[in-house]
Image (cartoon, rainbow, N blue to C red):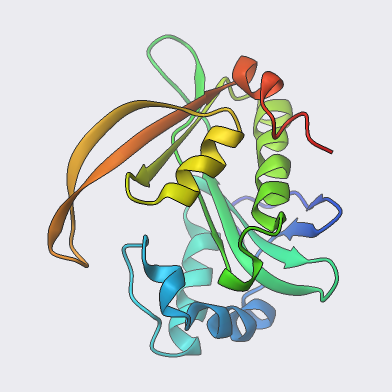
Length: 193
């Protein structure tokens, strides 16, 4: 059972974001997650089997402080990704902040507009429905494509910090980005068709 009883369904031309359906999504998502390249910038490894994917998807549904979606390709009606955001929290200045957002899109859909459309749907939901004032995201400095994607949406980097990536047993720079409502309204992504 989902902690958030009504995960909203969000729809664009290429993608539909809907509540994660573990029995339906796990086998297909497992196929995508076996690609080693999708894990380059993630803290995890290639899943061992579909049972591990089922467990992960169920966890995403049950974490009380996030809203999670399956990203569905409208042409095939199959899962091609996962997207989640933290529920807004109020900071000391009274601003509603989404502290983090994460998306995982299968490599075969990279640079084809699927992430862009999913992000636009999620950000519209965060700003218009959840009434967030800011959306924050974290990305490794060497992950150039993710940085470009965030900047296209209007994010600015406000902090960098050195962190250990346990998977690689080495230190890397983590960039902290934020997007204000005002920057979103002026962004290329918001104003794209």
